[in-house]
Amino acid sequence: MSELVNQLKIVKYPHPALRYKSKPVKRVDRELGQIVRKMFDLMYEANGIGLAANQVNLPYRLFVINLTADANEKKEELVFLNPVILRRKGFEQGEEGCLSLPDLRGTVRRSKEIDILAYNLQGEEICWRVTGLLARAFQHELDHLDGILFIDHLEPSELLDLRSHVEKWEDEYLSAVSEGVEEPEEKVLSRLRELEALRT
Image 1 (spheres, rainbow, N blue to C red):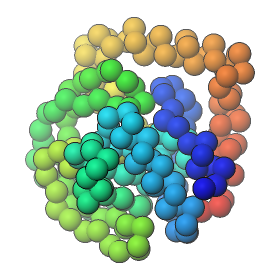
Image 2 (image 1 turned 90 degrees about the horizontal axis):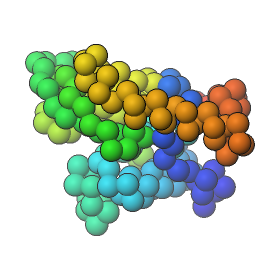
Image 3 (image 1 turned 135 degrees about the vertical axis):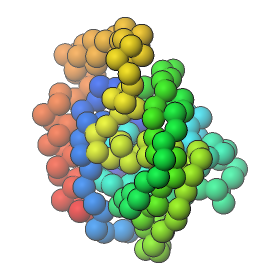
Image 4 (image 1 turned 90 degrees about the vertical axis):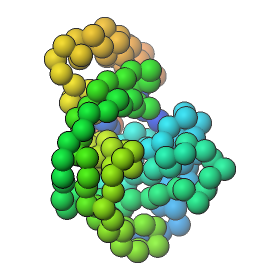
């Protein structure tokens, strides 16, 4: 397994990678398969149902989903490369959380039904009409690829209730950067641009 894959971990808000707009994947190889496997493993460890590449400090338009959150249910694993939404219909409110914003929950308005287009690791086209939890998870993870977090969708009053948590993480991150535990933003962005060149 490559050094890059071994270093992958879920980054927490306000890590700069979470606001980075991902670039389309143009090269699929063995290492990308290893990246996907590691993303699933990290997702299961955190008891999540979805994980985007930004959340593991990678600049690729890629996310994984398993609605069961069960590592033993491999047949339920879904990989989406270069995903897009072709059509939206209706709206519904639902509660969401995020592995990069642990223990926070909020009510987010999402499209009720979506037509999606993406590719899997075998290069096969995925063109589905989805509803329910899969539609919500897909929209949540697609937002990540554009540097959007679920808290960006919250009503001001609800966001205000979470503000103390958000500010605490911001202060902790700045402290970690000053202590050399976390990389400064310019170094993170430089690394992301270098990784882009390898696969986009």
